[in-house]
Length: 96
Image (cartoon, rainbow, N blue to C red; front, side):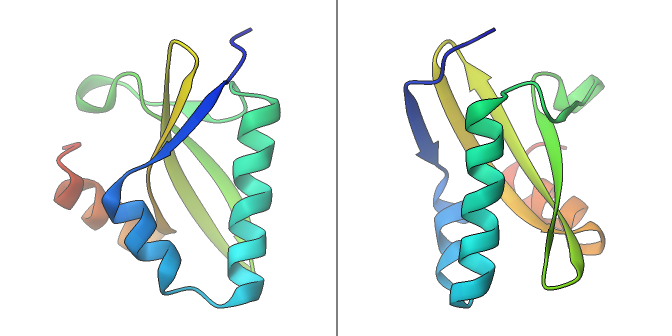
């Protein structure tokens, strides 16, 4: 099991987070803490997204997905959003 030492947010992740309300930020922070405690909690993606994992969490009765990757001891947070917007944001980040 990999011990995470550092967490890095992508510029898109940080920009998305700034737009959230306080309650949504708390839910997002809980999700990040869950990943920090158990890095393999997400579902590993294949093909173009190899190495990226997706973690599902809830915020205000809405299911959200967060894309992240662990490289050595660093957790990279790429993007998050609802299922409908998630694939669009992945394309803008350059995953697909």
